[in-house]
Length: 295
Image 1 (cartoon, rainbow, N blue to C red):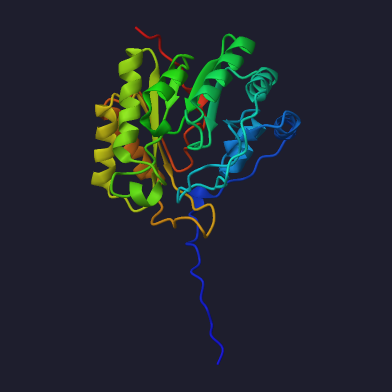
Image 2: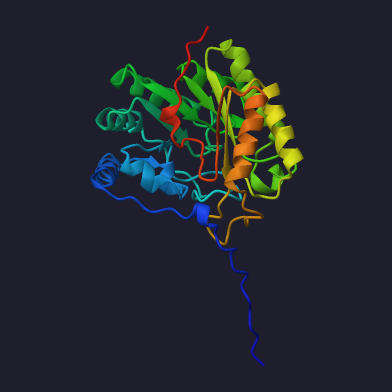
């Protein structure tokens, strides 16, 4: 007797998440430049739903230190496998791409490199230095892993003086063990708090939380409060979307009106900049934020 196996189908995506895919000459030029310089972007590697829009506007988020991550987070589409050695010329190639794309604000992220003693921190420093040397007026935002909360690694990145230091909390405390491989909720808060303490407020800190993984409203507000207690300046809130059936399922889709409500709540809690919406991601429209002068 044959057995019928029923596969659970993904819930239909709401209309507000259905996007038209722009494609123009800028998209083709961006893709061509990235391929020419042999660079990785989180746009492609993480299957970001906004990458069509961003590339069509001539921007991208660069992912350094390879395209193989040492962690296997349940939400992330980046490949998990043994990383390749770092490429010494990658910082200069990123700097060249930034120059040719005429960016005023660049976001640089990386895979987690727990195989390296410094977690890839020195590679971040070298990339920041190379980008600034080639593009002196650039605003540099880094989106970093937790570096296992090693002070030496954090200092390597901070000594390069990025304007914005972004480390994502990703989810609420209860869901962290399921959502984030090898990560720790309090360790992430510690990283953000240390940045403020070590830089005496001269570097802005930023974090992000995905919604739709099963968090409650009170748990979300608790996480926002935890971030403010760590003196986090900026927050992004966006809808989690399942990259494949092998990843964590979407528990619920948060409506645009709810995102507006959560954004207002975050502003009331004291975040200086809030981006909250279904398609918001860590670096989405990052260049639209105008840095106020540090006092």
